[in-house]
Each structure stands twice: as structure tokens, then as C-alpha cells.
Amino acid sequence: MNRIATTALARNLMQDFAGLTGLDPAGALPQRYLWTDAFAVCNYLGLFETTGNPACRELALRLVGQVHHMLGRHRDDDPRTGWISGLELPEAGLHPTAGGLRIGKSLPERRRDEPFNEQQEWDRDGQYYHYLTQWMHALNRASRVTGNPDYLLWAIELARTAHARFTYLPPTGGKKRMYWKMSIDLTRSLVPSMGQHDPLDGLVTYNELQLAATREFGLMAQPVLAQEIADMTGICRGIRLDTDDPLGIGGLLMNASRMTRMRLQGGVGYPGLPQTLLDAALTGLESFTGSGSLELPAGYRLAFRELGLSIGLAAVRKLPELIGKNPDLSGSADSLLRRLQALREYMPQKEQIEGFWLEEKNREAGTWKEHREINMVMLATSLAPDGFLGI
Image 1: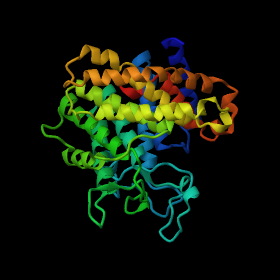
Image 2: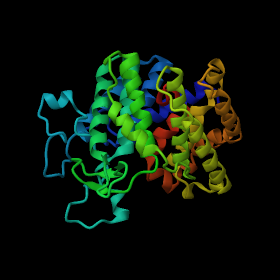
Image 3: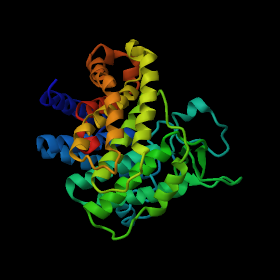
Image 4: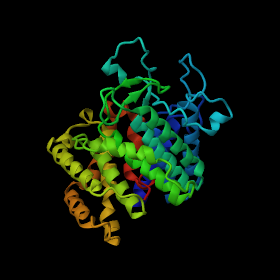
């Protein structure tokens, strides 16, 4: 399909999403979920940049407002009320991310006196670090597209809050670690283990915000997230990155692309790290491809995880051209290009995944319907990825 056709498909998916979740027309009880909404904001911004339709920009900014006013506040079924940050209006409205943002899960968070149930925990509310970093990215994209630094300042405030609450020093000593899931008010861990790629997401996102603040907006003369970046650099050192999960592989590819693009824009370089991410992605792709997962019927597949891979493949697709225009990439251009060449054999999986989930019969499967909103938004991102990728 050409770009006009894929843009039209993405626009239709995002129109359906707006109606289903109470964004447009605005519903009395909108359904907000932080991960999905982060991708959706970027999609609307990308559609605005591609089509010039101001309605798409309006939907992106309206969605930002809905997320802050719903997921920045306590749940309706929670005895606590008001903003998670504890701030009162009007200050709370000026700092909507100061207390973090809820996930938006269907069940309330686990009580302090309630035993842990691993299966049920997936449906319980709280805060996820890797959802917060996605929202930081979406806010940064909103700043860049609109030219309004307020969105970037909210992202930086969210980064500081999330970092302060999710990272900790183990009581037995050693380097800092991270919690995977925390309570809505960020006072206790709900799942104490560390997400495999959470530190990497934080490192890349903090650098992205730092670059925007100092180079694009000129907001601060000095680095604004220097300690947070130093912490994440330490946590990332030595962690295992390879995975056969398609969403995780896609994240590795996206982060390799973001780091390389930031380096080309004058950001801080991490010698060898993009290559390390691409190596881990290649290892994961070999395993995932060999598993035959993409040959299974829809009922045995999770669209949003596969679409994470296709978005990652879109992220690195244009890197060889960019590197070719900037051969003096601190001596790393050749090693990056070798790895990108090795990725070429997997590039057809992007269209394979999209084509499968564009078939109406496959969207009748329970695995699609159970995760309908996140699936349709990430399918739209895969079809028209420039809004999310910022390219």
C-alpha cells in the first residue's frame, strides 16, 4: 500500500478509537488507558502533520487533557479524592503530572492487607514506569508539534517524580534498582521486580527530554535530568536485553533508532549502545521467527505485541539513509550499517503483521476483541508511524 492508503486506514482507526473511548464525541465517562493513549496522542499529531487537518491536532490535545484529569486523579471507587499529587486547584492543573499517572486498569489497586495474586494483579490499577515513559514521549511530541513548552515541562516533571519513586537502593547494598509496579500514590511497590527494559526506556526518554529542553526550546542552560540520567546509566550497565517477545524486540529497535537520531541531532552519545541494542534485537528476531508464531491463527496471537515489533522495524527502516548522510558518526557508522543490513531479512515482517491484522476475519478473534482499543491504536501507529517516531 502507498502512503496515502495507509494514512487513510490509520485515520479511520483513530476515528473509531475516539468514538469508542469517549474522546470524540466527548463522553460523560471516557475510557482512558495510559499506554494506549500515549500512542494515540502521537498518532493524532502525526496525522495532523501529514494531512494538515487541525481536527487531528485538537484530538491529540483534548486527549492529553482527558488523561491528566482522569489518570492524574484518584479513581471514583477510591475513598481518596482529588489529584494523586495532593495539590489543590489551580496549582494541580498547572502541574498535572506531579504525582504521576494511573495505569487505568479495570480493578482498584491491591489493598495493603490483601494477599498478592499474580493473575489478578494484571487487572489492578497502580502505576507502571514503562507506561509513564511512553507518556513522557507523547508529551514531548506534543511540545514539538505545537511549539508549546508546557507539555515538555510536564514530561520533565513526570520524569523527576517517576524516577524518585520507582528507583531505590537495595538494603543489602549494591547499585540502584527499580520497581516494576507501584501504588497509585507511589508510596509502596505492588510488584517489586524490575522490568527488563524499564531502565533502558528511562535512559533514552530522559535524554530525549534533556535534548528538547536544552537544544530545541532553550528552557534551561544546564542539564535538567543529569542525576536521573546518571542513575539510569548505572542501572542499565550489565543488564540482559535480549528477548523473544515481539513487543520487547520492537522496543529495542525503537530505542536504538531514538538514540541514533538523538546523536545525529547533537545529543549525548553512548558509544556502542545502539549496536548492543541492535544485536539483542537480532538475537530476539531469530528466536521469534523460528518459533513460527506468525503462522498461528489469530486466536493464538496478541496483535498489540506483534504490532510493537512492526513499529520497531519501521523505526530502523530509514536509519541507513540517515547514517549515509552523516558518515562521521563518532566512528560507529560502519558497525551500525552492518547490523542494519542484517535486519533487512526481517523487514517483510512489518507488512506481514499489518496485513494479517487488517483482515476483518482476524479481528473477530477473541484476542483482538479483548484488547480492541490498544490493538487498533497500535495498528494505526504501524501503518502511519511517523507521528510516534517523530520522523
